[in-house]
Length: 295
Image (cartoon, rainbow, N blue to C red; front, side):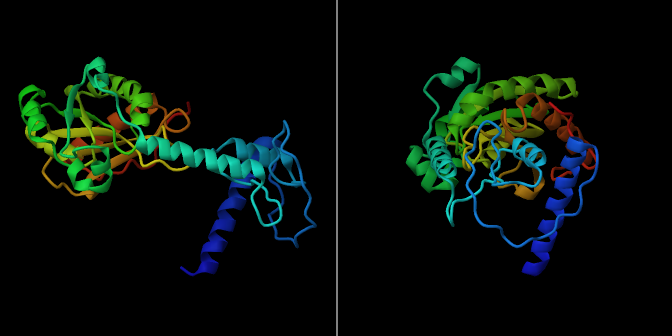
């Protein structure tokens, strides 16, 4: 696909989105979007209506589009640069991402949740960030504890890992695990007592699944944070655990947070996914033709 093809595709998709929003706003379809010569630049302060662009053709439609996503769209500019508000927002969101990566789970927190605490072979947070493989295997003491204390042979072993944003786990982990503990049994699965893994990479679920003899594993981890998304979790599911299991055999539900896929909805989706996975006898399944209910 050439660059011109990509541009044409993007323009067509944006046009379709604008038309759909305009239908909700006005009850009719607007005229097709066409390109125009740029007008002389004018500055609009972003007041209570929060219009991001100078003199938009349809301020109501544009405002509705902006309100429907946390993404940076139609932000406006001054000369060839961001508006000061946008620039400061980027700096703030970047700081949130850095803080998320540097965050850590306090000692004793996992026990307070009723989870079994484990840790990987990473000696500290710095080594965890620099040497990803160290986060894919348990240290020896944690391996022994997992073999001794984890529930044996369950359908689904729940695992909570700090990942690349411990802050996300601290905020959204407990409600997500609670929701999973309700939805998975309701779908007919036996569920093991949750395990917490410090300095966890996704691959640690493979070893835990093997050690516990679980039929499948579900690990929640803090996502690699983007701008302003330091509170986002991912759910990774794996069937028939084995060491070094390929990611193509796993499934992922991402952006689990209040501004994305809220924990309760994500848990329902995970239960649906696991039913499909067990029916298929393997991971990498796809939920087609379905959309989750609105919040």
